[in-house]
Length: 548
Image 1: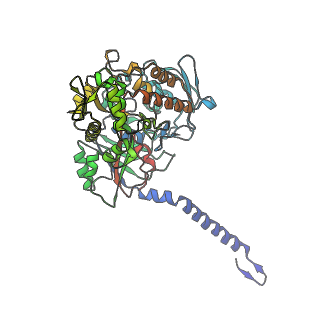
Image 2 (image 1 turned 120 degrees about the horizontal axis):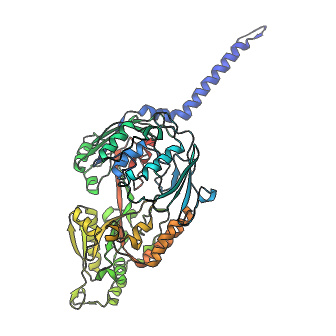
Image 3 (image 1 turned 180 degrees about the vertical axis):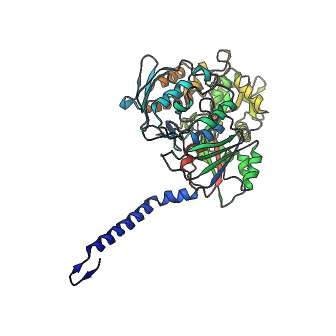
């Protein structure tokens, strides 16, 4: 604006005001988008090291956590569990819920679920992700051609339909196919999917499939997979341009490369491996309780473990908090139930067995055992010394067994520890041919189904081809009834209430004894933030949020 004796030039004023508005707008945009811009500029390459072989990225056939490092980055799921084990919609508009009718009973033993997708998501080729893609995924997941990869889903989906481009409805058998598959591009893959070898399926997906996740597969080899940012992924702007996932034959090889600064993130890492990594201000060691517990499994068909008084004596002999501190250096890994402490339904039902030498010895006496002059309990000249089988290559398992041995010796009993190679140990467990006890790992992620772990039908044997998970051989009609009721529950709150009731039943019978929470360990460069281990699944579940 310029002024003289005759007045002011408002044209100049308007230009000045417009310029000020533009500058202000730019400043506001910079204020709110600065973090996103800085993330984008970070770009570059991030290298993840892992142990094993990623030979299967086809979500129809691959179930292992190692391959999930890739799958979770390139295929978006309908919903996911966050680091707090809370369900959160991902491709979905909202979680299906009984309160709005999107989950409901549909006849005897059936449940109907409506999945409504958000309208603004696209495949990496630009096509919209719609309900027909989800329907196609179900048709492929539960088709005969993939039955060898999914043996438990015969007659699972009874009805499927699409009511509009964003909503697909399914009538299913609960407990068999509750967790939906990730959508697959019907337009790109229909007629092309094969049920070949793992390698053939992976090459097919790596070369032909469009992707729905934050990254796409740029190149694929079993030992090295390169991911590039998916430009169509609009949920969150990934901060890192390229992800390289390198697979090593051994943890030792992976650790050597990490020490040479050739890797930015390594997972999984054992406790022994963690101790080999020197403390450094530039790295972060994440050691969190996982979904897996180290458990003492009794063979309930044999003498010592079949007596509930002996199992209670073991609980009384244990100091659970001391066990956690001694082995893991923290009470954070103490078992409190058959569920992980991170599970929303978990209750400390084992607190009723507070450590008590007197109560442990009382149980032995009720069993007819007497202490000899050496203080060791015996009956008919036989010392109270059961055996336990452990995996010779699991140092945490062996450490737990040693602590258990010391605990029993304090109360006048003994424990014969027998270490076997992994394959042999697995055979003893699967075929239930261990004499007294075996130490094994039991996984209880947020979607755990008690029926698969505890129902009497799940006792390994010829009827289920030794594929059951009820390794102790627990037979309890109340337990079986609760497991069946869990399948009929369509409300999350109802399921949590039932799981709490089931934990009380578990604590009364002690079909197995949880000893310690197995850790999930991730080591990464301190410059990387937002890595959030959940304790199960792949570390890349939220890779679009990682910042460097």
